[in-house]
Image (cartoon, rainbow, N blue to C red; front, side, top):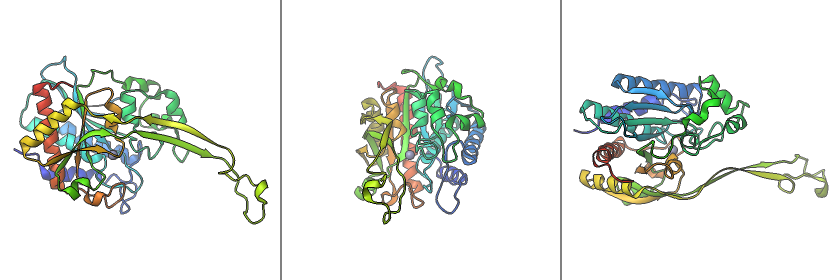
Length: 341
Ligand SMILES: [Zn+2]
């Protein structure tokens, strides 16, 4: 029995409707009406399944299917539902849809896992609205502060704290989203490759070994525009010649993903007869934030022409389904073997 290609396609197409720029790529910023629409759509599908739907204090959406042993931490899988401006339909949401489909298959097949299995839909991974990249995964692991929520503003001056409040969350409680090491058995993220390697080399899937570091710095340049022809050079306050200050937003070193989880992914991919390649990720992902806290694994599916963060971003649904298959088998293997992280 395989995962259902039509359902995967339908979920992706439906989610893509929650878009602030129809016809000009997908734009779904965090804590906007489009975010609300996507959240409601996913919640609806999860409720149909009969799993427990909840949100944490950092606005992460979860669908939780209980396991047989209440003492065990959840196997978590998912990705982000925010996008860049004029992005594509696959970055982030493909991984969320994959997680939803895995929950559906577990339910339909009546699989009894020992661990709870959770789908997570994260926000503000791209930092498109507030510049708060990897917000959800940071909130779950290293933690975000109330101060950060007050400092981050969108282009209209709305703070992240205000946006959370308008969405029904209490910014004062954001620290409650934090989970301690051991509180999550593993985090698995399926994501588009965002590069041309898999397609060019003819591999069906990528199994990520490491993720490059990210150093996100906001440089504020202060100056005054003066007419270049009329103001003498030595009297101008040229922005690049005068004051600037740089604010360190986020620094993450390169991270290795969990070896035990990688082995599970490799074994399962072999068992399914998929051709796969070990590869490092040149782009940052929530998985690099969770990796130091929970055993983390990442699956890449091919990106047509390596394009991403643009309306042309595409992954064939048949290719995507292979990633979902691997995710499903990894979840059940980790659950039954209790693969050591
Ligand atoms: Zn992404």
